[in-house]
Length: 408
Image 1: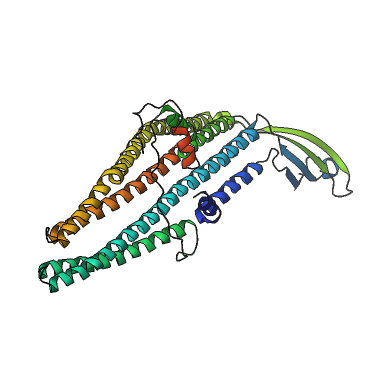
Image 2: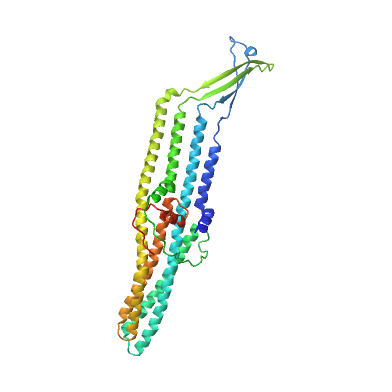
């Protein structure tokens, strides 16, 4: 699964788009200018007949003005763009981990579909044998026509259902190929369901991992830092902009320099102090909103982790029940009913009912195992882990607050 996840990281178009957005955010940080571009000014003077002559003061005016990087405004803007870049990186990580969970589920669904087809093929072979046996018994007068027709109908339904399940399995393979950005009809090897996983107990360690590493929560915390940077930058915007400049005058007649001056200019933001206060209050309200969202989501993680551990335990107990109890009993019931029917001591109805019980047990056992691993994939995402082995290592550490695990 890790190899498939790395292939998805490289090929999936949504992940490539997220990587490009992160790269663009980093470039945006590098593009923040400490020194703005200088302003060059050029003009002329039209003198009146009663004022100084152009030859005295000059009739050509030119100058250069530079905005000064004071009060940390550029640094505040750079912190905003850096926070945006970190947020985009966290979003890319979250998107990858969410897609990895989806890939795990798709592969498990494909393996389950392969197992369902395997069970169906075994049942079809058994029904073929039953049809032949019932036909022989019918010709010998030991079976009724109703029994023969019932078995033939069951065989026909199973053959059609097997074709349907094969089509569903093909679609599951399409889903896997889509996540890997392969051709949707690319062949996949036959997959097998994994063995039943061990117990995962609800513990404070799981909560701690979820609170620290859950990818969506990490995105929300980055958004909080980004909102804080916006508030700081907005407060800096209330300070005046200061520029320094030089200006010179020259007479066009002889090209001689007449005079020069140095200038300092600044904006007057105090006339709009109410507007600036509204800007700050707006960004502070947005910061408060994302802080509340992050705190609420962190609290919901406790409930989600507990619910997942309960569901994982239920799926494991169900798989154990079918594997250790119901499946052996159903197999024994089918063998007994079939032997009694062959010895004319039982009914074919009992044989078909025992077959139905065995099929249900096999399917429910496979679905319980697949369901357990799908829930484990969800828990891996909530804890911000890389794989199931890391989750197993955490669950085996002391500090569990749940009941003792069941023995496999």
